Image (tube, rainbow, N blue to C red):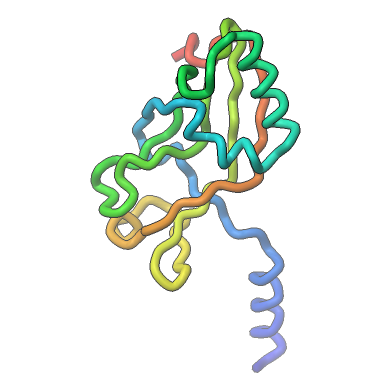
Length: 143
């Protein structure tokens, strides 16, 4: 292997994979906060903040609704799946959660963009590295 090829392999192996841009999905969808339990569990701080906010609202995670991006039905295996960004309203304050979204298919093939091949062959979506912020301004008020 040439020195140039080795350098390319090294750069590709240490660079982070590109995250899937969920804004290109073009559809939103609602889901109960309880559907986000696995994601919330990836950060004890986020989990704690959400538990506290739920206690203040006197609602359960099944009762509190959030919005997220949705894979449209044209995605053969992922149609209807919800992904970040998520927005949840807790009685006048909003939680906005973002993640690194990864879309894969058979043999671990990664899809970085919306494409006909991705819509046909993607079989799994995963989320990692949750980041979040709380706001008292409705994020949907300027839409």
